[in-house]
Length: 183
Image (tube, rainbow, N blue to C red):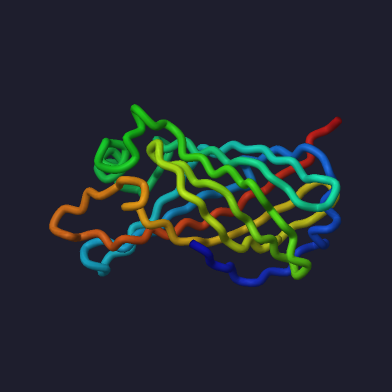
């Protein structure tokens, strides 16, 4: 799975991001999902409201880290739908309270983007995921990366599809702002 995001002009180069430990800034981070339903006629949108994470930038400029999403925090602006999404038909939040993306490799590409590779774990199933992230804020103390990528929910065991209403792909848009941890 790979995709690119629309270009944006970062305030600095990804090479300005120095080695060290970084923490996800929840206030500057969003994880949104979009899924076509009712035979592709309706586009359901939602946002996960509770996100945490951390990372480490290595001396050579590469990085690794993780982003953890509280599965029960999904808000689609429809309480009945949100309740159903928390059941075993979808996220099964009682057994699997978190969605986790563990980035094993984040490699700056020199054009304001970074190639990100890692493992996405949803309801206890992990799948490799690769995508291109666009830097929109880069400084010695903060970096913001944005990416959009498709996820095939069936690969994670989410097969509920009453009357074949749901399309197979969910599109995830993440904007992740990391700040440098003080020493």
